[in-house]
Image: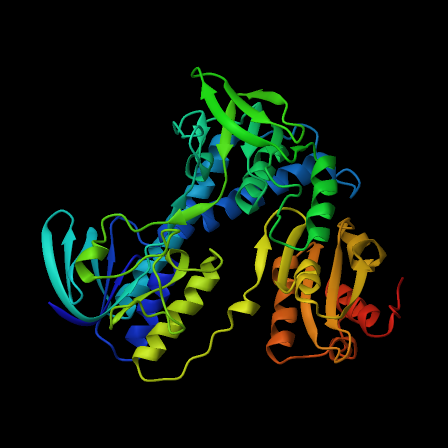
Length: 464
């Protein structure tokens, strides 16, 4: 069969690209090696982790906060099997939704490993071997968990994020290698359910890629929840005897230290997944980090072959992949799409959540850009006190001379949703004063954004 576009990979980047291609009148095929659509995000990433985060947060609130609200919760207990079952149901419903969208948009779905025979011919190895030809191809094969020598997962006691989403029991002591988004989110799930959680991190801060003030604030919050942090520790190896795990590391003084638990989550990032693609047959180049090289239009060095999402440079985020998928689809249809990678927000789904867009203070200092910072504590907000979500802050960074907003950083309840006001404002190059003069509803968490903008503009927040 022949297509205008073939997409390899059905994660958020791939399936969204397929939908947009079909909407624009292109005959479209999507190739997925697994039996369910949705890729890592829907099956073993974003969706299942958020399901468990929500379930564990409900339990945590029932145990620690409901009494203050006047709700008696004596006898509350975790039914972990049901928690995992609910997570699986959410995943199934979401993946079924993608299948429905493929059918609705008349997109042909092929199950199997897609391999280039040449730039216009793809062989699909599934239950049977098939070949299709295509004018254009979008590679959207995503990423897989990374690990370093000495910490190879056995997927039983030394686990990756995939296994952490389907454990049969709540760990007694979960050691997390890596203080990034994945480690902190999954660590939060099990800490709320009663596990001791120790985070071993090579850097001197958690969520090190975000504004340092966010990492500092989140560290304080998670310590109150029982997290233990071992920063500036280099893990050398991890061993297990089948029941316990030992993590051997060197601290900042180069002293040998050992941590012992019953599970170890290796969460040191992810790496592009290109296995089985046969890139060499199509002449597609990769960089020294295993990513597919692309230009500003996300086209590889081979005409008609594009790559998006985790498999190319940039943040490994589902929404980044989606935007890139739409971008390529519209480009193929002859449109002039726009994507601003600088304004793709990042979120950590702990509680409170952490969200950010634009430059950090560290970025601005490194670039020599003069800026002013405004910050507002959630503790001073009426809505926060009403909901008992008083931890965190909102920070606005603006150009010292023009007042244009250059970065926004939040550690607060519903930050994942609130950050979109900042993204919208920054897309239109708003000033801090613009935000400060917009009426925000009361009482809401969004008022903290207005107050931080007021602080950045004139150093005059109204409520602090």
